[in-house]
Image 1: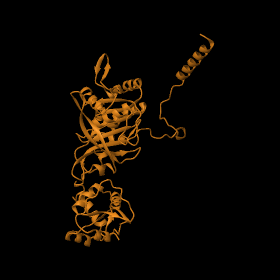
Image 2 (image 1 turned 120 degrees about the vertical axis):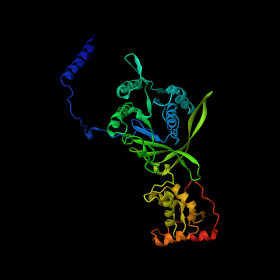
Image 3 (image 1 turned 90 degrees about the horizontal axis):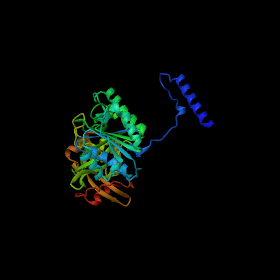
Image 4 (image 1 turned 60 degrees about the horizontal axis):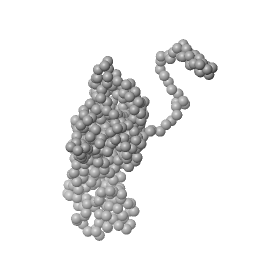
Length: 414
């Protein structure tokens, strides 16, 4: 051994002796804010999936939650594009599923979504004392982290259902928080996005979707982002599916994407479902996923009744642009989708403006006696709201006018 190597060994031996003589004392550990360096959120999918954070993906049965999670996994494995068109860096994925078989369900879905199966790893139990047993998060999390570090570049962890990680009563806040902590630590240590899949509780339609997660409130509280998937009625009465942000403590908490579920042949004679992403939609999760006909007010009136009264007030003194109506509806907490449904019931006249009055203009076509009585006994607080020169940016075309002359309508805008 040369002198340099001997000196290094002596230094290491001395450090070890010092460590043994000065053990770490028990007690509370404090970190001074001055010693920390502020850092931005590291996004896997900007605004939707954050590295090192816990996310929930919730919804009623049959909404394709697992298929959506597999779509996320497929995008990551190939470095593909997210629904908003942004590019994803390629990485590996861990999946722990207690409901679906990897061979006949999950892997075919991944392949149907165009994923790289060589980058996906399924948790298949653990070997203990020479015997293979079911994976136990309370005992095997350190082993899972070691395997994930051996694989390297794990960007996403999927747990389906997330209640599998709670051995005790998942309706008790303290037990749920304690059980989720090892998963949260795993995501943080690996710097991977963690997505736990769960269901909605029965009832609660029209309430905040993030509060409808089954089990303890701790599931939503511990997660940094809650994604909700649901099927709702469109304005024309057709079903449509929406993935929306129900909650986010680290970014935007609204907006969503339309999606549909398709069946395809992943391999010869092997059918699987996959997600087809649609356009982006705006609004809160409660607004996007609520049924406009729900009886959700204290006096038993439906949301569409409230929207109808809103329109009577806004249009009381003349035509108003649909853009202005949309703005006021948002401030009043009323879904514009519900406003449009109410406008059909009220037979609102809608016409495309021109010249100095571009955009779509709405007006009350003809008040019934009951409507006239309502406006007579309720003093109006809304003045003339029409704003000349406002350009409407609605993506959906208005309904054609069937009654009323152009000159009559144009005169109302002046």
